[in-house]
Every structure is written in C-alpha cells, then in structure tokens.
Amino acid sequence: MKGKILFVDNTHDLLIKELTTLGYQCDYFPTFKRDDYLNIIHEYIGVVIRSGIVLDKVMLDKAINLKFIGRVGAGMESIDVHYAENLGIACLNSPEGNRDALAEHALGMLLTLFNNIKRADADVRKGIWEREKNRGVEIKGKTIGIIGYGNMGSAFAKRLKGFDANVIAYDKYKFNYSDEYVKEVTLETLFLEADILSFHVPLTDETHYMFDDAFINKFKHDFYLINTARGKVVNTDSLVKALISGKIKGACLDVLEYEKFSFEEIDSNTLPESYQYLIKADNVILTPHIAGWTVESKYKLAKVLLDKIIEVLKKST
Image 1: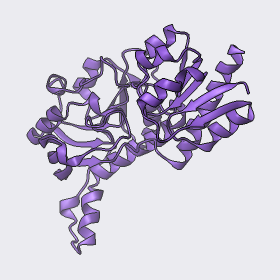
Image 2: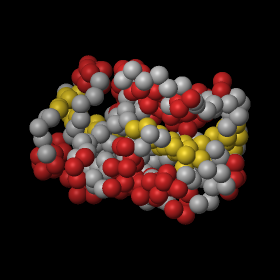
Image 3: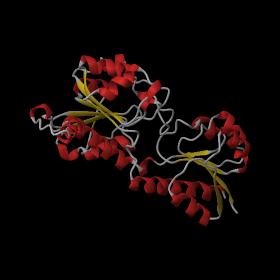
Image 4: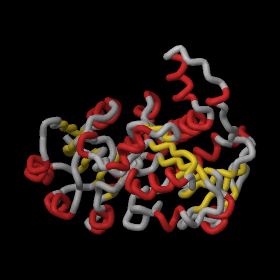
C-alpha cells in the first residue's frame, strides 16, 4: 500500500477505483462527524472533500502526513488554503469539470426568466391560455456583464456567442482576456452598460456581500441578476429591496446565502422574510445549487481531480 486517502464526501466511483488500482487505500466513512475525522486524519496522505467538513487550522494541524486536499468542484471556502499551503499541502479543485454544465444552467435560467416559461407552464397546466401576459424579452441586443472571468465566467460567455448579445466582463485579478466571446472592461464600465449581471466569483472575505445596496445603486440601468457562484456573494435583503423598487427586474438564483457551504439542507421554516419574498416572486427563478450538477459533470469533476492528484503524488514519491 502506497498510502491512505480519506474520502469525506461521496463522489464518482472513478476516483476511488483508479486510486485503488494505483495502490492507495481509499476510505469512506459516511456516518463520521468532525470529531471522528480529527481522530484519524493523521493517518492519511490525502483528503477528498466537497463540503462535508471544514479543513481549518485545528483539523490541518492534526493532518501531519497530508500531501494533498482534493475538492470535487470549484469552491475552496471550506479549506484554509493559505494555512494548508504553508504546511506544504497541495490544494486542488476541479472547476474544469463542471464549467460547461454551469454555463448551460445559467443560460437556461435566463431564458426561463426572460420568456416567462415557469409561469406559462403553470398556467397551461391549469387550463389557462394567456399569451400577452407571458410575452417575453430577448437576449439579443442586451449587454451582459460578467464578474469573474475564470472557468465559469468564460464558459458562460461562450454559450452567449450565438445570441448576438454584447458580453463584457470584469475580473480584478485577470487582464488582457478580450476575445471573440467577451470584451474586458472596468467595473465602472460594467455599472454603466450592463442590462444583465452574472456572478462567477469564489466566496472570499472580499466577495462576501459584494452585491449590496451600494453596489446595486451604482448601476445606470435597471438590470437582471444571475447568481450561480455562492449565495453569500449576494445580500438577500438588498436584492429583495431592489426587486421591490424595480431596480432589479428579475433574478436567477441557483445559490442562496442561507446555505452553509454548498449542498446542505435549508430549513424553510426558519428563514427570514426576504426568502419568503423570493419564493413567491414571479420574476425570480430558483434552483437548489444544481448549476454544474449533471451526469456528465459528475464524471468530469472526478477525472479532472484524479489527474491533478496523480501529478501531486508523482512529485511526492
């Protein structure tokens, strides 16, 4: 046996199968809690997670043999990446695996909102045949502003190419990426021009509640919001206030700030008034953090992460 790898969350069988074939013992304990992991993590050279536990300083200090942390997906907010890397632990994720699925989902939500598909479908099922009430609007000619032009933002821009929209993007940490799909702009330009805003940023101290009252008020035009990033990027109270005033004309939300990390259950009975508003609003499309959650992406997320893990293990032997 070359070493033990701990799987905290369930993922595609490919990862365990291939790593086992390579000579690693792969353990998965679906009933374990945080304290259980604290007691055994010192035994492992690798950990594969989604969002089941937080790998903070306390946990990492116990992980004295850890060579890598593999995140099945993009978001790294459940890992103290800076501390882990200072300990010499490679922190890996696999956004390449679900960027296409997420981009398709974001586009699907926007089309659903623009064409009143959800409401029209409900009407027809009730025997109501209302055409004028459900007249839609077109993506063509609209200016779509993307914030965050990494794997997800760039994949979304590519999906928009055939719609004859004006696609612009702002990324604080990337430069010179204008191409056939997008035009790089400043944040100030995005505020002036955008009719639709789509977030594709990680959740960090910098992006937490980035979308608040002050941010919204900087937009010249009334606009639509798409958030397939992380729920806490958007201040829900600010969003609802802007939906009521009409500053925001509609919203597509695959994530909500009430989630703990990504996929954990939400208790609807304890959520605030803003959430109650969202679930009743005709101009809000909600999905349960499934952008990027396809049959194909489940495999690709595992394959991308597997390749990165193998590279780390090769270097460490």
